[in-house]
Amino acid sequence: MSITRLSLQSVRNLTECHINPDPRFNIIEGVNASGKTSILEAIYLISQVKSFRTHRINHIIQYKKEALQVVAQYLDHNQYAHLIGLSRNRSTTKIHLNKQPVNLSSKLAALVPVQVITPESHRLLEDGPKFRRQFIDWGVFHVEHGFLQTWKDYHRILRQRNAALRQKQPIQQIRNWTLPLVEITQKFHHARVKYLHALTPIVKSYTEQLIGEAVSLEYVPGWPKDQNFIDALESSYEQDCQFRHTRVGPHRADLNMTSRGIAVQIGLSRGQQKLLVCALRLAQIQYLQHLSQQSCIILVDDLPAELDKAHRDRLMTLLDDTGAQIFVTATDPRLLNVNPKTSKKVFHVEHGEIKEVVY
Ligand SMILES: Nc1ncnc2c1ncn2[C@@H]1O[C@H](COP(=O)(O)OP(=O)(O)O)[C@@H](O)[C@H]1O
Ligand SMILES: [Mg+2]
Image (cartoon, rainbow, N blue to C red):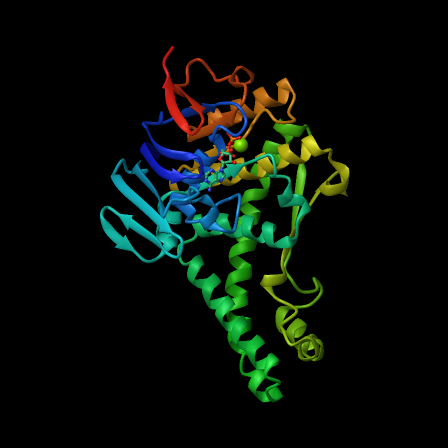
């Protein structure tokens, strides 16, 4: 699976550019503020219909321009070619797949799985549990058909129960949501647990290779461990009424990670935390490949940042071993050791213009 051609218009400082990426390694080099990350952002955009840098997609549109456009030719895992087009003006996003309008952005996400590793990646560990839930749900979404519907159904029922709590509806009205919520929670919870169970040994193997320690994962379901969900919901009823929202359930889940029994947030250095996040993402990539033969597009922003040579090289090798299409940005590409047997292209970015470097 790879992007065979990428065209951008008015994406941040990139006024117009066209590249034919290599199916394997693509190194994007250039000084600070040349536009390297913006290229990764554009690739992410055609998969996720959002940015990994900002919630405000309008910020990506070039100043003084009406709209941005990204067009990609994409070869899927069956070697079928697709044409993906995305345009965004200040108020609306339009997506086209093979020249047909697409309403559901999840269609693109399913077609083009993308993983990002950035210098801010350790936030997956340090920020709130929402990011870790997103991490798990990304994985389940790609390997389990129907999970998106489960996710949506759960959140719809939760919203309805929360609305009943907010409106201080009588207990019987609120209890009407108990059974649907319990049923959908079982499905939701089970899908996450099953996924993490399969992912854990792969994460262990990657963390051993990258940081020399096996990291353990523990899923925290969003209600007390010693209770089943229906009892937890019952026990939480009075507090739910007081706070006017549902305080237990998979929307409160988290993923605890420990190394030698100590939380990774405390026990690992910043560099090790970054490598752990790489290991987590690599594990997701490998598991997806193992189950579905689908590979990801991997975007790595500023890979050399804060990694010593040995770890950089090890990470490059593990990235290479995925066989996926990879885009790596760097201010100094000499720091990136690509296996000479792996095909690669180098692109030089300068003041928002991109050119392939031909040696
Ligand atoms: N909406 C925008 N329109 C035009 N330029 C922008 C916009 N947003 C950011 N920029 C500029 O784009 C340049 C490239 O940013 P970036 O892709 O982060 O560079 P790099 O990753 O190479 O350091 C920066 O100088 C930034 O100020
Ligand atoms: Mg950058």
